[in-house]
Amino acid sequence: MDNNKAEFFPFHGINEYMLPDYRLHVIQMVFLKLDQLPGERRSAINGLVKKHVQVPGFRNSTQAPAGIKGRSAISTFERRPEFTAQILQGWSELNPALRQKVYEFLKAREWELLPPEADRTKLPGFLVEWPKGQDYDVLGAAFNEMYPGLEYAENDLRLMIVWLAGRLPYDMYEEEEVEESE
Image 1 (cartoon, helix red, strand yellow):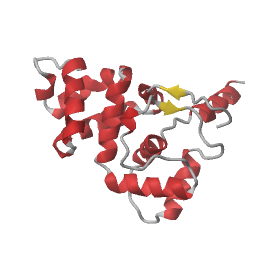
Image 2: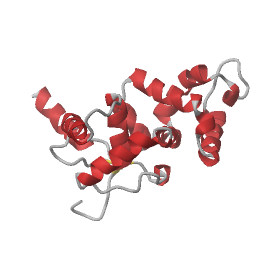
Image 3: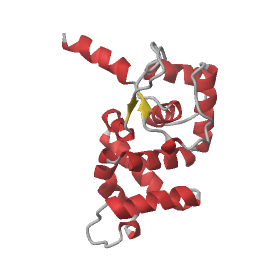
Image 4: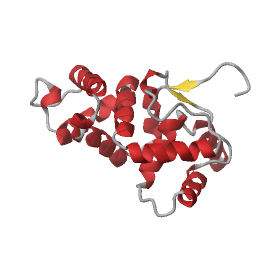
């Protein structure tokens, strides 16, 4: 960065970049595998669910089945940065192999990163600057070249890149949108 001030986008800003079906998939996956997360993460997520997620027919939303709870949690994911951060951190912890590969990949491309196991929920949000010329297509092709034969969902790769980098491709997409509207 050119100056000492970093600009952050709140964690729930990621909703602008996530397809609705994929957002639901991520939330439900975390709820389905909640018992596989470390106690601190599980407690943080359950506390936020209890406080902010309303599931019809349940006094305690944490007791609802994962599928129903996931659908009910979408609006919380869209509005509450602390909830979004906990879900995404939990999701990354549930995908340790992809997390490690993406970390190694981004390090090889000389991105500045926290260690893969760092708790990114402690950050104020996502940085808005994205390295020029490194859009999702470029990164996906380079990742496939570095790890040929590795199977993953494209949306999972993109989300892991965003989460580990702590960056949203805000500047990059803003420029493209301006060009398209002219």
